[in-house]
Image 1 (tube, rainbow, N blue to C red):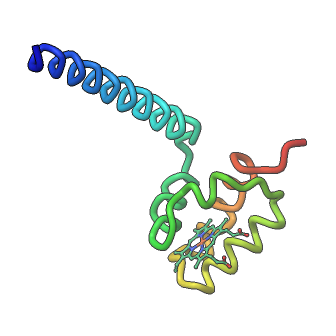
Image 2 (image 1 turned 180 degrees about the vertical axis):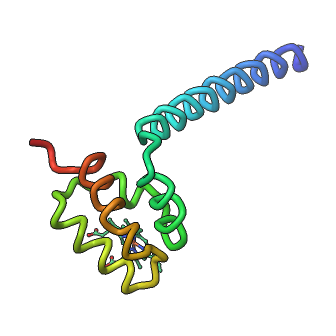
Length: 101
Ligand code: HEC
């Protein structure tokens, strides 16, 4: 019975697909949830995702001085962060992607 066999294989594949998709969705939601809703988040998502995604940032752990330097250099590259926003963003980055103490 070729069709019965194929149905079983297909069912397995479909199950595998949904489990994988569900796990990815959970992982994605968890990654997002780690970012607290503070004013810095808006600036980060608005100004820092034009050229690369947030993974580029979230994978780093820098102290405040280093983040200050990075934000400065990203602004030089063209990131749209105002003078008022910069300190808020640096504070947010240092807090959420800071060096472990
Ligand atoms: C105009 C485009 C652009 C914008 C906007 C931008 N970046 Fe970047 N960013 C880059 C480029 C290009 C690189 C890679 C530069 C390199 O490897 O030297 C990079 C790399 C980085 C890195 C990795 C640096 C490292 O030391 O490994 C971090 C962290 C980063 N950006 C943070 C930010 C933050 C925070 C913002 C928002 C303020 C931002 N970026 C906005 C272009 C941009």
